[in-house]
Image 1 (cartoon, rainbow, N blue to C red):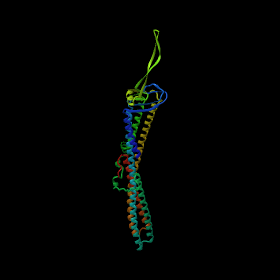
Image 2: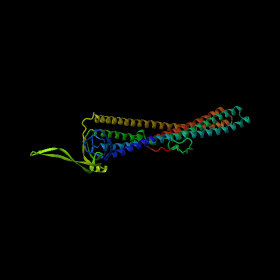
Image 3: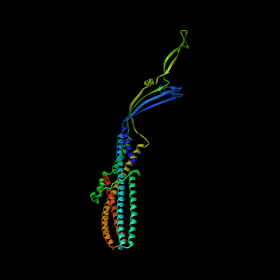
Image 4: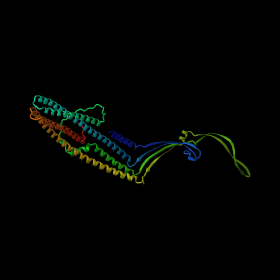
Length: 437
């Protein structure tokens, strides 16, 4: 169950990310490095041979203006996947509820079995005391008392076994509910009115139940949503084969330790360069020579001086991409057909399961009615047997056999009762009704 909850949360996160994908992106970059040897200064774009420190910083943004609704289809698909995950989670909770109801009925059956065995044992004890009195009075032989003692011992063992079965059924129910085995836990026995649930006539036909299930079953809704999601996958794949128009913008600046500012100069004299002859007279040529004091231009100053920006439209036209778009479309079509087959198979299985559950419920109703008639007959037979046993008309073996027949009939009624309740709850499950007892 935790895994399905995580899947639901994951689908929600994908939806949020897909919605955010329609917004412009904004990215920053920062580069700091040291260059050695002959290289191009990123600030002056000139070749330099000495090492220098450099830095580039920038911002870039891009947004898709038109992409044949690809972003729209992706958002719609993510939304469908979220809904599908929700229905999958609901279906899991309903499955758990049905399993817990089954475990609950198993505990009730075991507890009813204990009650019958206790009543049987109390009746044996009373009959054993009466038999001992008859033996002491000479009305019955001692063999009858020995046979009643054997019956009493056997029924005692049966009671202990049923108590163990009840404890195991309760532990199994705790396991289904993910409770700690050391935790105190018990159930409240509901008042089940069997007169109100002994038939399937009020439920309609299997076709009626199937029509309701198609609208109520969470797994049906899940399959429908996954089919719509597969169609969106095909739409997204088709959109990838057309051009896309995007708007982009960039802002950047840079720094280099090679950029210097002159802070002072000193005149060193004249450097002769040669001479020039004018009208037969030679004149010397020289140039002044200075020494300069420099410093690296400050970081922030260079940032301000070197700011650059650009913006524009970008059109991406797919011409040949190794058949990637074509393959994506074919894969999406296969996925769509596969999901359609899975949906149809699930509908067919749902119909088969409903027909099977309906027939089993109807058979359980008939079995319960027959078991009750058998129990009534066995109880009347035991009443006659008790009277005949008390006057010595039948022996202990015949009496205990009649008693065992009632016990078997009562056990059959219990088994048929809870089997019928479970079968009807299964039909409630298919119709989307809450699982209540």
